[in-house]
Each structure stands twice: as structure tokens, then as C-alpha cells.
Image (cartoon, rainbow over all chains, first blue to last red; front, top):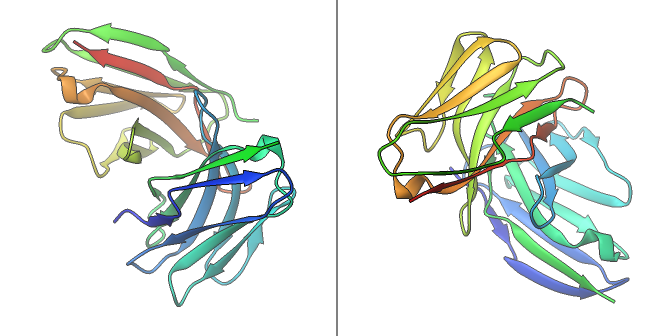
Length: 110
Length: 112
């Protein structure tokens, strides 16, 4: 089942922080985060594995609450280059396939 | 970076005609995926493959078939294209080191 992302859209000024949430009704084995710029392919940011292991990407971080079946992506001191649509992808049982949320559109203005 | 290419990049076809999209990878990855992306729906899995001749359905597989006769190629076929299959199609491979997906550049398909 498709995870639910919130908010659907957020507008920031450069230097501000943002949090994007991803929640699932099913138990999660792992959560992926991707960023997609307009007209381009999604790009992998990081993966969070059941058991707490995290693999990160530069200045963006994330958390994974297995009990609540939720993950949050934290963007601190946002830059113009952070603009894009962020997707979480969930693996609901070690099935080697991801189900993606509908995305959160992030706009960073000067 | 994994090498993954999709062809064609753009295609316009008529309702009822068969269409085949190709995904080619150069890194010998076992797992390959086909997703479609539509406004308001995000990325939805059509089919995926876990090896040569090993494929399985995703959440929106009706009207699509796939084949993988070689490790490097994963083909998506629309047997009889419909307007509801107008979409952007992305192929992806799963990395070995960080398990993240690498997506191809996408194919924009328009069914008229």
C-alpha cells in the first residue's frame, strides 16, 4: 500500500529548515528517500534500514521510527538546489520492491 | 554510477497499437524495475525482474507485459496501447552497495 507523505508542498526561503514525513499502514523493512527535479529522473538520497542503520547524503538527514512505521526527512539550512519533489519509497517486507508515496514538492526561494 | 539507458526517450503512438520500451544496463545488476509516473500519483510499480526470465507483477500491471532474456535488457510491452497509458515511464536498477535505485532518464509516451 502506498505510503502517505506530508506535507504535499512546502515553500521556504533560503536558509530555512523543512521536515517531510512518510507514514505507512504496514510494517516497514526499509525506507528510501529520493529527490526529483522537474523534467529529470528521481535521484537516490538515502536509505534507512530496519534496525536503525542509516546511510546518508551530504547535509540532509532522516529518521526511521519502526514502531510507528514512519520516516522523516530533515533539510536544514536549505539551499536553492534543494528545490524539487521528494519521494519516500517503502519496502514492506524485504520484497526487493519499493512502493512510493505521491511526493512532496519543495520550493526554496532566494 | 551505474549505466542505465532507456529508449526511446519520446514516443507518440495510436490507440490499439503495440509498443515496446527498452531498458538497458551495463552493470550486471540483478534487479530491474519499471515504474510509471503520473501527476498526483507519484511513481507506481508496473513490473520488476530479479533475474533472467524471472519477473513479477507490481501494483499497476494490467495491460503491460515484460521480458528479460538477458541480464542487461528489460523490455516493457504495451500489448494494445490505450490513452490511460499515456505517462512517463522510468526504468530503475537496484545498487549493490547502498541498495538505492538508479533511474533511467525516462520515456515520455503519448497514446492518441
